[in-house]
Image (cartoon, rainbow, N blue to C red; front, side, top):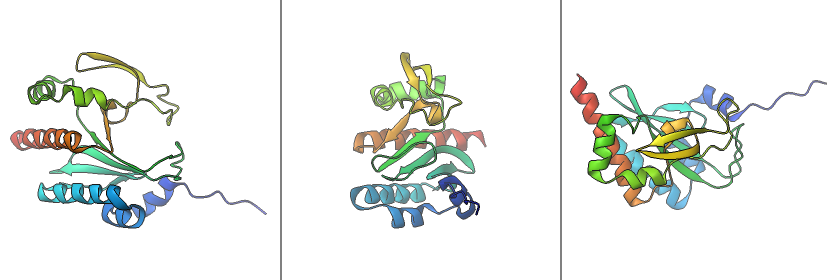
Length: 180
């Protein structure tokens, strides 16, 4: 008898394309759940949609343009690439923080240290990019940086970090509005 391969998380979610609301309600608890619900409310108030994008990954979109990602990691869940050890919510931007317009904004707002504190190190989840790459981020060199999210992941952001992320999203939105 042939053994059937178990469907991967990505295969399952590719078929279902789970809404963030349903996923959060079914899989999160406590403070983590409330933090994500609060962020979803912020997104709705600011006309930012969050369609499913990939395994436990929802795009953050404004006027149809991707401005970031919200990823959810659930302890014990195997994404097919990484075994998850603890629950987390992760925000990342779809910008190059080294581009002059973003760099100037980040420096003016005093966000440089927050960006540096949230540089994501490679976990070896993709063989195509492991062990990460050396990157200069806002004039500081980092080794073994993950290539996802321009190398900056806000993992379980505190209030100050979340404020930084929101202001960067708002800045991205203002650029998108001015392009029209």
